[in-house]
Length: 192
Image 1 (cartoon, helix red, strand yellow):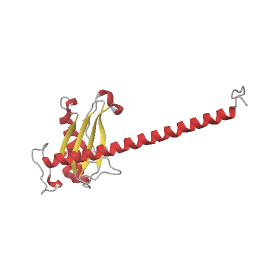
Image 2 (image 1 turned 90 degrees about the horizontal axis):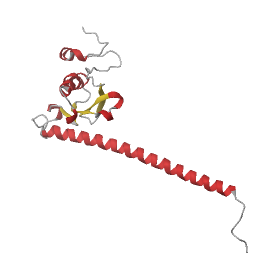
Image 3 (image 1 turned 180 degrees about the vertical axis):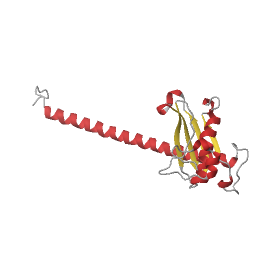
Image 4 (image 1 turned 135 degrees about the horizontal axis):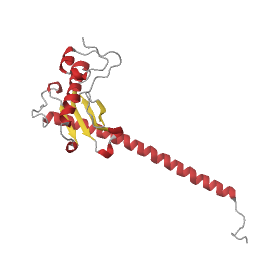
């Protein structure tokens, strides 16, 4: 009868077992990475859809504007809702500055100059100091009637600058926009 105790080490078997363990760990790691990536994407899509639904709900209820848009009216007749996430973080004139320098000119431009899809809601968020991406203090998301969204960051280092349209070539602006928002013109725009 042979004994199981052998003094020779079979390095080939050990190498094969180690390679199988490493390969299994790699496959498990890739699967976890893929799953987490899908989960983040799914959460982002879910939150975007929920944000849109909440804004439409607010718009129809009129809780922000004081005048509701009942189901008999169209969204074109409704006033655009401006909502603030983490509203307690806004200080002083930040809300007023954001509305007058950025949100109102953007809504007017999107609805009257560009007019591809009407803006039905705008959500403004202020980041806490430890969450600010690249020193931007605020994010703005515009929800369009067709379900699309437009978003951007503003307030670099806390400075709320005037929003201006970004055009591929020369901007074609209406005279009404130029008259109403003279501080919101692109830097290369020639006033006639």
